[in-house]
Image (cartoon, one colour):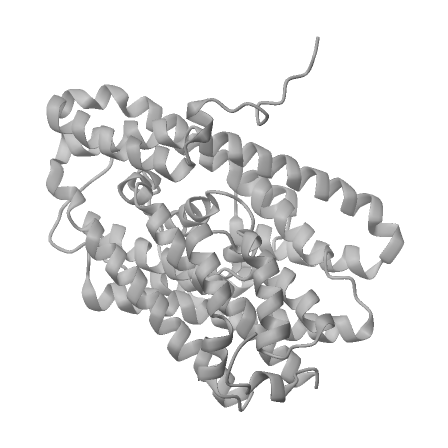
Amino acid sequence: MSEQDPAASPNLWQRIPLWQKILAGLVLGVLAGALMGERASLFKPLGDIFINAIKMLIVPLVFSTLVVGITAMRDPQKMGRIGLRTIALYLLTTAFAIAIGLLASWIFQPGVGLDMTFDSGVDPQKAPTLVEILVGLVPQNPIDALANGNILQIIVFAIGLGISLTLIGEKGEPVVKVFESFAEAMVKLTNIVMSFAPFGVFGLIAHVAGSYGLEVLLPLAKVIGVAYLASVLHVLLVYSGLLALLGRLNPLRYLQGILDALVVAYSSASSSGTLPVSLRCARNNLGVSEGVAGFVLPVGATINMDGTAIYQGVVAVFIAQLLGVDLSMTDYGMIILTGTLASIGTAGVPGAGLVMLSIVMAQIGLPLEAIAVIAGIDRILDMARTCVNVAGDLMVTTLVGKSEGELDEDVYNAKSSR
């Protein structure tokens, strides 16, 4: 039997981009709900299957990609120092990103004025204290944390395991290779699950539109506006501010130097696909050495997801407002903490924004079915959050290069980029 490569001769369905399929599923679901009313709920099982499949991905996807991301940093002494600075900066900016997203949603309240409920969800539990949250980060039994889907404990265990595998050197290589293969398999499985997304979104949105009417979809334009505003503010305030305060560098030169990468990022919605352009911008426009740029940028493509963090903050609050759920200060703290840690395992996985959003929603007791409300506009949001991710990668690369004495400020301050 000859093996046929489906990519060699794609049919019409395969040639359509996934985001267009999901958007079509959203539109068709709206039409089905409008025409059929409550009878459109017969399509809901399609959505339930999709939601279950996303839940199935969360634990193995986060665990495997985190371990691989940590072990990818080979550590001579200098690389270890650069790695610590890089990760610290990425986590710091990610926390800021979620906070900005939360603040923007709290100010503009895109989901206020509607009242929705979903058939199933995650029952919110009594809010734990800050001390209980910190103590609970470390699992007594990592196997139990994996079995019960305790994402925060899984993240802490995966980071610790990844660091340990890196420290033991060659003895850890066999295990690292297993995790690399497992992570590749999870990426492929994620692709398979996301190929079902158009049908899942159709089933969920048909049920929503049929049960609640078309007015539930009107706030989507406001959500897009809030997310884009938060993204622009994050780049202008946080990234430019850190460059000016910590690096004593002119942020206007930074914004000018990364323009090529931002254009590619916005059009492709792929941080990994933009990486070659980012490397060129870092070296030719910003003056970062090849060694620093070659290490920090790929790490950023793995763990820096500030745009996704903004998206999580905006959408989580939007859905809570849509459902009439009052979030406490502890809930906001959990969104920041969970989103910051979970974003480390997001990179390079199609549809991972929705997967990571489900983690944040579960932590604060919001039903995962509500994801369908924004899934149809995910591509529009993805373009903005990819730009933020790439801009953050280049900002951290510039700061690390400056701190290591490997930033050519004559190149950085040049008036014209090459």
